[in-house]
Length: 125
Image (cartoon, rainbow, N blue to C red; front, side, top):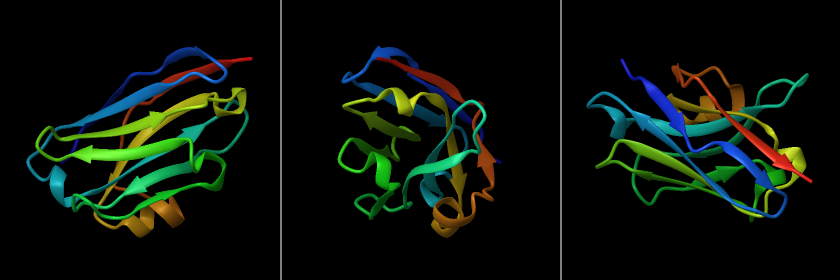
């Protein structure tokens, strides 16, 4: 069982930065691929970024955040991060942390093993 708790959301002006954190419980964190999703009002939840379980492994991003967002993980701290720079109003959403044994589920299907409760990110223009 893995429990995920996000933090770091808030209100920021366009062009600003935020860093989201996702703290995971459980001793098997390092064996899970981790990802971030977001859901804006009236829209479906969408994939944002993912990273495989091995430190230094490939990272994956949706096109709209490439070059602005960076996903990383610290297996010693059981934490995954999402550094968000050059934020835009269209980045406004609830951001969810997710964990799955297979990065394919994070990147392609959204049918993942564990979800966090979400953290609100609001970008003002």
